[in-house]
Length: 303
Image (cartoon, rainbow, N blue to C red; front, side):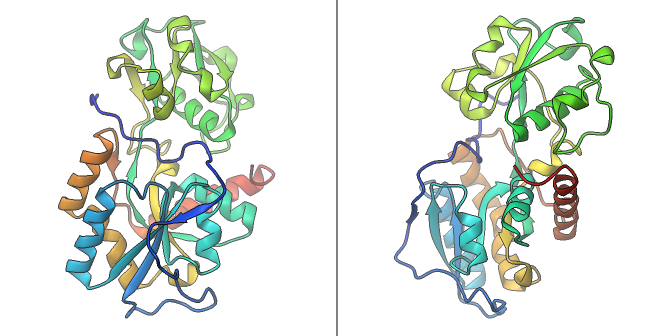
């Protein structure tokens, strides 16, 4: 496991105001599709202060002639609304599950066109060195919010520490846990408290931001979700556009330059080595999004 940890891309919500990084007017008319000959693309981000975005901007200009302008948001509720109303041409701040929840809640149809990376969710333990060491009845803490709770249950299931009554999905809950067949007992706690449980319990699943704040050691990570697994797939981060622009060749070319070697190198320098770059086909991303949205609707709607 790497000694570096990537910054958590979907952290706690910040202030409501959106702060523009550049003096730009914003994207295009929300009612019209963007033409392939677009020369300026406005992208909404949540980490605009990171220097890799300037490397990306320069690379896009060199390769495509397109000028990139960024709009930075401190409230994660705003970038999808800004994209849907035409203030932005694309955004890049969220994973598929977050987008699905937003689409269902806001009755929107925003679509992913390029995958960026996935950030594995780790199980920490200071008591054991591997999942095989866990004993029957050991207690493991997980975050109790719906998104991280579901993913944590997927991590534990993938590791063989619990059994689920039905296949994992992004709406899996504690109620889906087969306690009689599970090796460990799951203890839901507030996400902010998970790091404090690492020493007291057999283990705890801790989001990267809280792990960093608590100075947890990567040496104490015993497992994490496989970045290539179905459990991790809903948490792939993405470039997102309006549905009418999902086949726009220029936007796709601009988004794909996130994976230019020079840009990826800058990303790792800024954020560390904990993420795994992903290049899923757009249709695969869109099909996965559609399935997550279906699961959310079948489960009673968005959180």
